[in-house]
Length: 592
Image 1 (tube, rainbow, N blue to C red):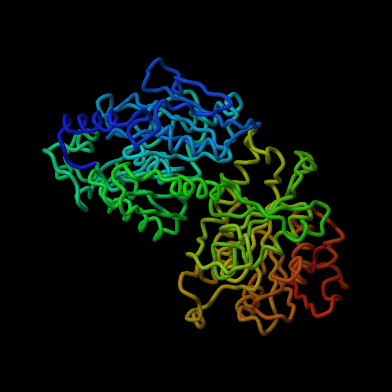
Image 2: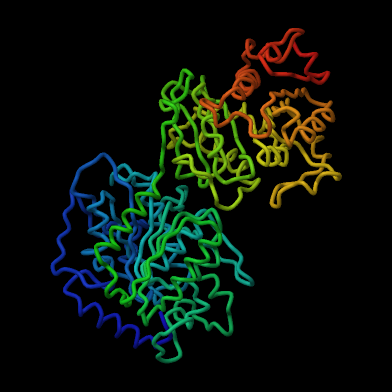
């Protein structure tokens, strides 16, 4: 959207639209678009009012199913149109999405003439909430909702994604309400799971970044904000999707023409680089001969979009036939818990409010943002009737993870998620999670993350694996980026704790044993098995380390007395296993 007078923009939009046989602003389309659908609804009001700018059209794929993942596709208009849903790339983007099995919602939204920013994102977020609120009626599968859009619609799709989960933000001198109160479903989430940006303006402070048309003093973004960049730059930052990018954003795919003279290609390039730098999964296609919509909608590009969306949907994997426990487990993603991997029994019908799933929250070695080294171990635990929430992205193969490090806050996100799911009547986990019995654990750097979070009152047990806090003498050995709580942090532990170490060859042995010897205010023990720092996690079903870990969890979270005998009593069971040693503090020795 380059600088041009309001009249110039409107004339350009009108000329572009009239040049196309049908389908609207956003690339050439086939005449008389007749989409093949099983059902469709026109002019559905998503806001509960009588305004045309709060209506949407809904299309379901021709192949009938019980429910469909959803893409909300937004027309382009330089934010000047409030009623172009019928021209929202129907013969190209919408058709390809329907053919791929996605329900498509094409909404209107308030124009810059109707209301100033942020009214437009309030409308799109209301559409997302409407999709969740009306899921049963319209056969929406709300485990996956994506946004998509061309030009200004690409902007709205992108900023809905980069602000996903954020209700309010302060950008310099501007505090912006991103959620709004449009519609009847304010209790529903407006978060989305992916976004497709087709030629969208992304950084509204840098629209002069490349070759473009320049016509007059008023740009579309000036009209949308009722301002000027020179006088109120923070307003333009608040309008920019790049302002809000962080590692928790959903995946975004970008398409931009290198010969786009309306929204220069440098907008798409910058968005791609910012997303990559933040660790967001992203792809970009820059079309050498592509203009602003023209030449962009090749079958190759449309299929790239579909493949990206398919890959962005929650993935799952059956590991080692589901484990050896009584409840065959699955490793999976949950759309509502970004950057985490969930291990859980495949059949939740065995669990209820009377028999809920205890929780293990896990942090990975090296603070990697994927449990790729530990998934066999964690899957095995889940198969014995546990909900395991591991930091990081699901490992769909055995390839090492090479992305950014995880953070201590991800364990807290796991705790928050477990409580929220247990309380949500719409969740498959509703009243099936034992939020009174939660162990937080981690290996190596993940153990440091665990100790960093140890004071959280929701935690009822700790398990520190191949880890221990550094002291002043050896802190130089730590890898950059690791959390480094001081030894005094140990006094904040308020639950029983076990250290599971790899013997004297474990590089964390000295730190872990020093921690253990300092802990005298809660029951504590230290188990050692002489395998070094790597443990046995990658062995079938997690190897020997699974034995004390599972016994500890069964005792602490399920109250199993047979498991307790592995750690208490004169002839406790763990040291009877070949290779294991066990040290206990006085409080644990006194337990019966």
